[in-house]
Length: 232
Image 1 (cartoon, rainbow, N blue to C red):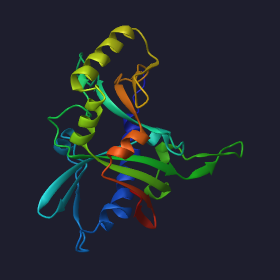
Image 2: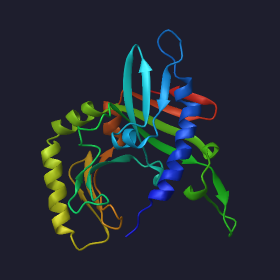
Image 3: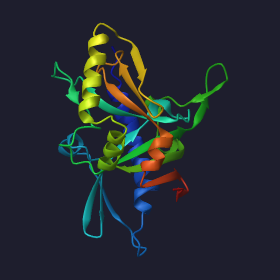
């Protein structure tokens, strides 16, 4: 079983540098003044679901960044939200970041990145390996800001509330207890439940259609080295 945590952390760090440089540092309030932001890298903030803190109009807004780095350049029409997973030091599944309301997260920043390509040994063009990713390797990044509570409520309106999703995950784990492969069940046109037994954390995710997320989003941005544009 694989854990890609080291590669993930390196790639996420480079993405955070890109986001700080090309997005957060350029945000302005309604009066045209820069919005203060703080990148939170300490362990307590990370465990509490805070990557970025925005300070505007006297309020502090906590953002948890989530990026589909392994699916970069593929323009996937979904995003995966963790229901539960097996964390280090735990035997039983731990409630995932999507459902855990003890976390301080106010908003999710969902990120679909595109990355520069390079020539392989056979002279074909391939996406740059995430292990060697630099912050200037990102080309166009799509980012969607969604209030956590609002998204949870909208999913619950589809009859997929917290209790239902946790029970669904429990049932899938029981069915797949001896499996080291992935398994997916389609719930409806908006959501699939996916178990990734090949990963060390064995997460169960709610994979939600992008078209549904767009209806819930507070804002959608396209971000590049030249700056960003709000497209919704």
